[in-house]
Amino acid sequence: MPPAPTPAVLAAFEGAKGFMPVREGLALYGAAVEAGRLGLPLLEVGTYCGRSTILLADAAREAGVTAITVDHHRGSEEQQPGWEYHDPSTVDPELALMDTLPTFRRTLHRAGLEDHVVAVVGRSPQIAAFWNSPLGLVFIDGGHTDEHASGDYEGWAPHVAEGGLLLIHDVFPDPVDEFTGQAPYRVYLRALESGAFTEVSATDSLRVLRRTGEGI
Image 1: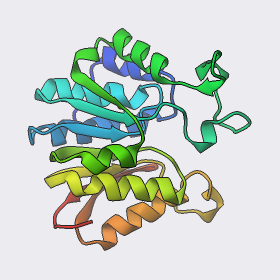
Image 2: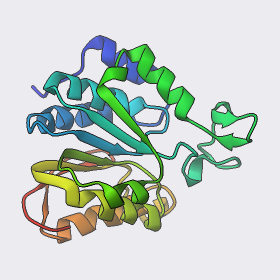
Image 3: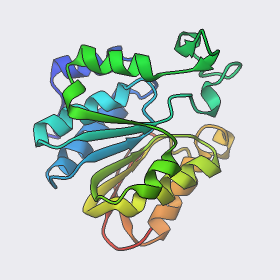
């Protein structure tokens, strides 16, 4: 059977603010446990309030590695006021801007996982530009425009170690999902066509690929 989080960790995941369904969360956890055996950090792009971070952090704790999560914490396009996924409770009342960082920190504290996560606050391309360490896993779950999804792929996929895993969330092949999952889908196709990655599994909108060649 694939590895599964403890009931306490799963309950923390289910209780956290966020959008990842349980089935996809379990697939993420299984991939993170596998990637953790490489002895390298596990990195996600797109923290939001820390729902998926809980699973990465627990897998990292089990493997004795660190989970890294990258986000500017101002919300992606579809999370802004007036859009379907906007949550008014994440708005800083003083600045009238989204700020999910405080919620994220509370989420990790309640789950008892703060010591296993490094949160990097900033925009993904800026951080990727100076990153120079190999990663056992990269989980792309940031913005859903072509600019942002492609930027995340181009910035972070090169750092996936040989045999490491690249995970892409919200992959929706149907053109009706242009504003929610077509950009991640195009990135997924690009990764496969590069010859650098081979698909391992698909669980609903989550794709897991393994680095089996060079490049991106």
